Image (tube, rainbow over all chains, first blue to last red; front, side, top):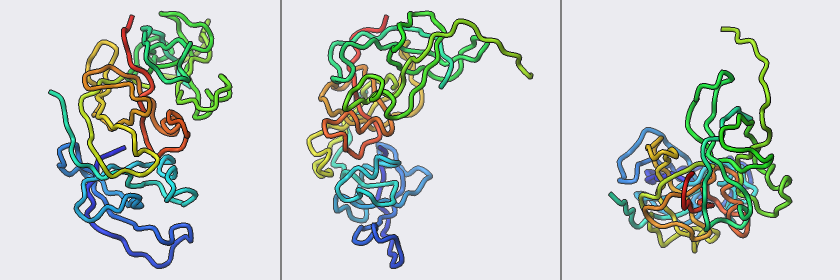
Length: 89
Length: 92
Length: 87
């Protein structure tokens, strides 16, 4: 899993029918402090995240292992909204 | 699959059910000439390897499931062979 | 599988149902001699094995879901073993 920040939404009308009803969000990868890294991901929202949310994103075949994304042609899903990250020294 | 040398043994008492009764080793991937290459991996022994042995590690998702006959097997790397001898001719 | 050191906790109240009860940690991959390698990653702990400061073994990619009782969880890495000693 990676940390990401939701930076926008994606609207699409012509898509695979398994994607109908799923919210697509544009996310930017960040580190554990919230500093932006260089890559962007388009992820399906499974936790009602909104723009600006600090989220946990799961990618690859594991992304299809939620109730929302089962059998859909996707490879990234938002699995949690992060409240806080605590690091030991 | 990759060639590796068995380096250390990992001892643990609290583990996932699938790991119970299995020996876990830290292996160092090596080139055919024996020089270390890349980072260490953790592998489960399937052939009775010992520390210092040159082995072949591998296993794709789902392999461990069939090998150990488990329902759930969060096992990625298996030691699947002990190497006796490598015959090779390096083109460099 | 790889060796890592638990260096942090990720707190989250809103998670997908499949991993709702599961704790998430930040793990720094290390070598058996203790040197840090690569960058830290987020790892799930479905068996409640670890705490901060522990050395653990984690499994990545497809097999990570297999560490859950259901075998169905959207995670990329899971802790499967708590290391007592390396000999």
